Image (cartoon, rainbow, N blue to C red; front, side, top):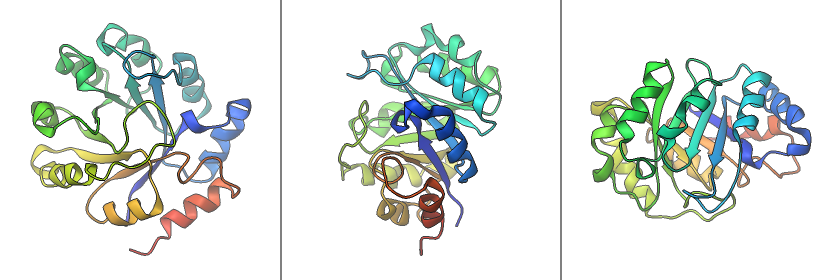
Length: 220
């Protein structure tokens, strides 16, 4: 069974960022997930534009940029100028007055448009955008901090999105509290990829390669 594994780089060791990127790359990570936080849309500051620039130079793997910022359209060009065609940019619809305009800017430069859906965001409020985007990042925890607990009601939201994805032509990705059990449950149902953070990948005693191999060898 094929599914994508993305490393949540806000959880990486920033004292050895170059080593972290190379180790994850050599271990077979599919892409690097970059959480950009402004301290306004979410109550935390995380990765910056400069962090993103560095990782974009350090790897040829795809980047998965998650903008947790207010009014991303005001600054979207700063990010797009430092990414590559084929990279993904997610925005939160609630953070923008006209999210479809921001998504069109992403599309216009050859990048993959995505939206991130918070646990408290209903599918009905983003219905039209589901016809624009190629990826939907479902937050299984409230955005802003690593190490949070999974919110069980998100599973019903994923089930509803799975029933719509073929008709609307988007893929579903999981972000937050991602364990082996969640991958075993949701990958067979059609979730395309999983963002790996402190629950499964970072801060563990075993090598990244071992962890990623164990995930890919899960028995479904």
